[in-house]
Length: 115
Ligand SMILES: [Zn+2]
Image 1 (spheres, rainbow, N blue to C red):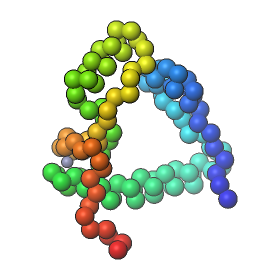
Image 2: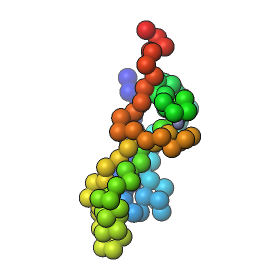
Image 3: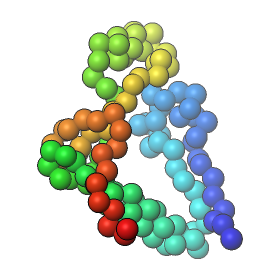
Image 4: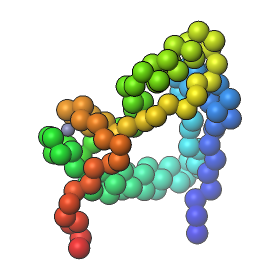
């Protein structure tokens, strides 16, 4: 048994990513009757993936994916701004939201809590 859903505004954001902030990004749409279950499921998924992460600098569990601060990415950003075109894909890194530590891969805790 699955949960019926669809992504609203997926095509708009894919075609013009600059509209993403204006229209509130891509939305996951589900039946109102399933909202509670879906929110609970998403919370559990976030909690289980976050708990495995561990920042080697400050011990935080929270990471976000951000564009790498390289010369190429800066040039891509300027080019995008000048020609208001879709940027060549930028290289991304995972960044600790608490201390700013950056890593190419998600840093995971060395000991698995359930092993
Ligand atoms: Zn950190």
